[in-house]
Length: 294
Image 1 (cartoon, rainbow, N blue to C red):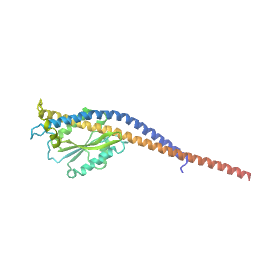
Image 2: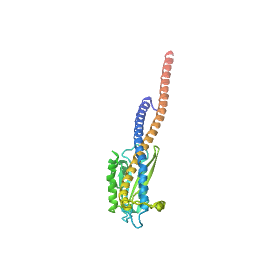
Image 3: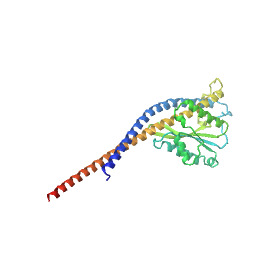
Image 4: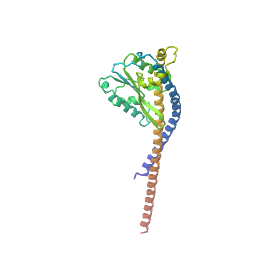
């Protein structure tokens, strides 16, 4: 059994750690409320934008293809990996990195072996982990999470759209954590470009093609699709931001509970050691008294 001084030092250390994790939990909870409100407000708007685009697209004459929905045979793929700038949030970042590596080595293994895959990392932790695993990161955008707003996101979205239009990449994908609640975040992998429209969607709006559009439906799509793509990237960042705070709050809650249990165990060991020490001292005194009587 460790001596009293060692137990006391460790006990004080665990108590200090519990104070830190408890404070971080409260900070993350406060940030989570704000981040959760932002994403919950944006989701209906984003869904409605997509709904309008699908409805208008269903009425476009066959043969017309928007520049953002065309497929090219460049063979080059861009993976946008969205993580956080800070750690202490459980498996939040590592899950994204694992998914990115699985996608690269699985679905796009041929392109990766041919050197036709680029990675953009939004968040320091994702960039660091990918580099540590010898994956080349073409660009990083850590500053987006310093002050997350739509205007900053527009610059990156415009750059991605420009790369696609100039056929630098044939496919652009986003990998990020989708927010469900404070305790649950789901890894999402979705196409950013090209825009995909399913036959099911076209069938859904087939009976609603009696609208008269002003300006024309093609002009509406040409204006709305770039805007929707900007909103889509911003939504992914908001989802990741809310997920990060939820994951950190949950991780710090567990860490605080674990520290509390450890403190109880250390206090029990400390009391046992103290009792053993006192008992030993009493036995020494009694033994000394008995020796003096002899």
